[in-house]
Amino acid sequence: MSSNSSKILDVSFLYCYGYKFGKKVTQNSLSKVKNGDKILACKIIKNKLENKKLNECMEALKPILHPYIVTIHSIVQNGKFSFIFMQWYDGFTLLEYLQQHGMADEVTAKLWFFQSLSAIEYLHKLGFAYCNLKCDCVMLERNNVKISGLRHMRKWEEGRKVEIKARKSILPFYNPPEVNLGRACDPRKVDIFTLGTILFMMLNGMPPFNNSNISQLVDDQINQRFQFRASNIRTLSVECQVMVYTLLEPNHDFRWNVEKIIQMKWLSKYGHKQGDS
Image 1: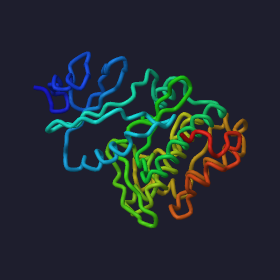
Image 2: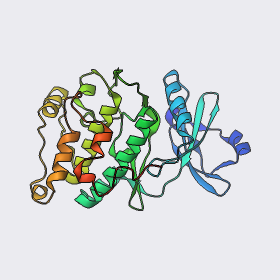
Image 3: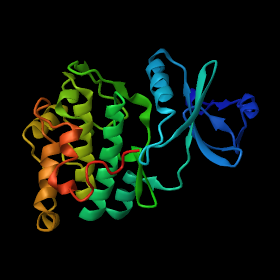
């Protein structure tokens, strides 16, 4: 018997909107769709009470045309389900790249990190924090980044701290100490720490902290107990290493915001405004 997540859905009503699906469609799947001469991806989610914030975020993102964020084309709601149509990509995820190649060289990692940081900076300016960025939400196509998986973004307000619940789909090592400890925080600072984890993984092929015991994991994070590969420590620039340590600052109040990070020396070749739309 099929589970709810694999139940085949009737999407014939979408034909009147011009959407044509090439195969059977199931809940939570990512389907390839034709809309005129456009190829789109469609993510289907169930309309639960907790997804109200998701729909608000997605509606806010529809007008966005940012070079490093997957473009939302439209959202169609029908009873129990929301159909989110977005830009299709022919590349692969950063996680898949690391699984295949092990790690990236510093020049490549710098480019991908800068593009990801630019996307996060843009979201912060719109009043949203990503909150659950991970390597499999960073898409790579023609050596450029596209940030996807914006389903669990949070609105932020200056001076207001909120509790970001650790999600089961997010491995704990991506989360900063304040999330793993269940403490209220500025969600933008969560993005900075997760970017640090992703940068470290690009440079080393493994996470900086990876302990199955949450208490020990948090202790490692607080004391910054991580090491670069011995083969890398001699080749990575000092500016690159400083960037990693700055991003993985364990104290939420001392962790820099995106505006300061993007002006650090390691990124000076790009200039502050590159990547803005």
